[in-house]
Length: 459
Ligand SMILES: Cc1cc2nc3c(=O)[nH]c(=O)nc-3n(C[C@H](O)[C@H](O)[C@H](O)COP(=O)(O)OP(=O)(O)OC[C@H]3O[C@@H](n4cnc5c(N)ncnc54)[C@H](O)[C@@H]3O)c2cc1C
Image (cartoon, rainbow, N blue to C red; front, side):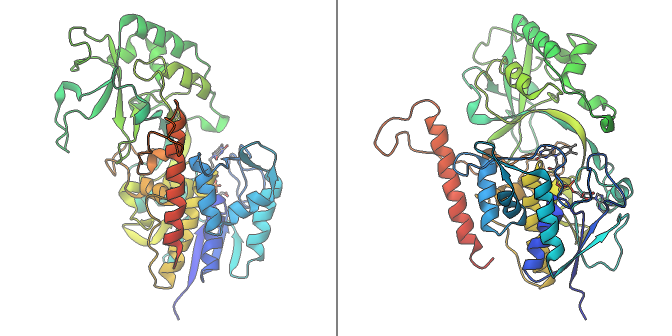
């Protein structure tokens, strides 16, 4: 008889959502969770879906916030995580915050009561050969033995334990009257493009003021379990500046090979470069600007960069321990390992960031695995939906798939195909500053839910 068991490793946000979705669409599920037999450095209980830090699922505003939109889509897909979050809400203004213990208790109770789900407590250190369908959802704190096994399976050199994140800016908030596009020495890229970077010029006074601000800004400290070495290739900006005020100017901010067309006679003292981060060209990361500056300080300091005075950040920089695979390279569009398609990945280990995003990938992985077991197809959600955009980011929507530049990310509007809202509102009034951006988000959110509803018929 065909084995229709789906083994899910990791009873966190992603694993629980995957188990729920798969069990509700016909699969028999064994959910393997190592706690309390073996703990992690951040979890404190034996409950499934324990929130290790904040108790917030962030904004619940589906019209104007991308994570709020993701909430809405997940609710429409019958998400367990969203149902339990809604049932355990605590007051948090426009955010969806939850009673931490009540939430974990609710998820645990519903998983344990599901007739098609069995929970097995114990660490999985390797994937048994006779498991036909597997979802690995062991999160950022995957136990070391399993991490080594995954490393071997993916054929990669490193399973990134070190998450160096540079800030990412929405392209339409860069002032291109100050910045310009050019590659250093006009070097031709593989795509035949010699203007692949956005460049922001600094004169000597601006550079000195910027370095002062970087050095003075408040920094986050590593947690005791985050004693990770700095890799020379990704030193935090402030560490570089501490080594010498000129060091960044000889590193990521070097001004050579670039001519500012807005001021061709003036040689910039330093140049900050941004590199395209997604295939749509809506998001650009600041090259070499991984940092442990606190988030509020980052916004202030990085807006000192000429051309970025009004920048809106899709993600701010950071540096912390993490475990994630190079998904665009090693996974197919159905979240399966290309070299061993009985294995799927879900949650933070796939390179998404955050409770909600991790659960969202769990939702899709669960549906996909159940469809595989039933020998049916599960077409991915359209790229215009938050679910589809997130899937696209980790399985190929990212530029330069397979490159070392793949970095975890929260959901944001920059991952969805852009829309051009009208210049006037329904009453013919010209939009004031900021209003058009809001109108654009609303249009994109409405499109997402309409497209999700159309796709969901039959899925
Ligand atoms: C210290 C820290 C703070 C964070 N703070 C936030 C925050 O404030 N907000 C936010 O949105 N996100 C935060 N995150 C990210 C957060 O971990 C993820 O968003 C989310 O929990 C990931 O969900 P997941 O299901 O992928 O992993 P997890 O929720 O971590 O679940 C993975 C599960 O797998 C189990 N496991 C691991 N290895 C094995 C094994 N070999 N065998 C069996 N079981 C195993 C673990 O015990 C765990 O229960 C934080 C992460 C860390 C590490």
